[in-house]
Length: 259
Ligand code: 5RP
Image 1 (tube, rainbow, N blue to C red):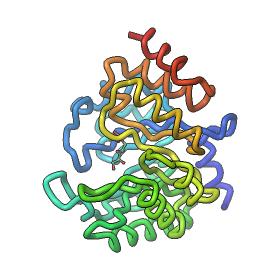
Image 2 (spheres, helix red, strand yellow; image 1 turned 135 degrees about the vertical axis):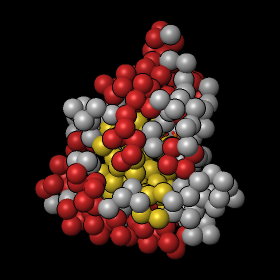
Image 3 (cartoon, helix red, strand yellow; image 1 turned 45 degrees about the vertical axis):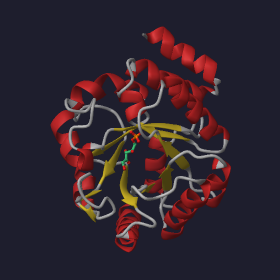
C-alpha cells in the first residue's frame, strides 16, 4: 500500500484506537429525500464534530456541506437506479478526477452479489480499485442487499469476501448473527457495519457493540443516528462503544442524558 493510501486510511480509521465512526448520509442517491435528510446540511452540521468520516455524494456535499469543514470524505461514486427499479442496476456516476477535486479520502460503490446486475457491480468495484490504486485513494465496498437477498453470515461472508478478492480496502456490510465469520472472511481488510433501517436506540447500540465485539472496526451508520430523537446523543453513544470500549448500558445512558 502506498504512502498516500495509508495516509488517507489513517484519516478515516483513527490510529489511536484502530476504529472508526463513519456517518452515512448518501441515501438520497437512490432513496431521494430520506426522512431526516431533506435539509441535509441542517441535519449533518451538528453531527460532524463527532464523526470520523462522512459518506456522501458529490451533489450533496457541494449543496449542503461547508468546504471549510475538517472531515475526511468517503465519496459515494455509484448510482443510476432508484427505489422504484431494480436496485442492483448501478453504474459509476463520478469519475476519479471529480473525487480528487472534492479531496475525497476514500471512494465507495455498492456490490450486489446475487443481484440481477451482480457482474456489472463487481465490475464497478474493480474499476474503482484500479483508479484508487493509481491515485492512492482507498475504496470502501458496500455489500448491498437487494429485496430478495438474505442477510445471514453465509451470504454476507460471500459478498464481503468477493469484494476483498476484487481489491477493496475497506468493507461495509450488515450485522448478522455469527458476524465473526464475516469478519474472518475479510482477512486483514477492515470491516464496518451499516445501521440499516431505524431501530430503537438500545437495539442499535447493542448491534454496534456486538459488531465491534465480533471484530468490526466500527460503523458506517446513517438512519439510526440522524433519525434518532437525539441524533447528537446517539452518535456520542455509538462513539463511546466504538472508541472508548463502553458497554451498551453506559452508551445508552449517554444517549438518554443528551435528550
Ligand atoms: C446505501 C448505503 C448507506 O450509506 C447505508 O445504508 C448506511 O446507512 P444506514 O445506516 O442508514 O443503513 O450505503 O447503500
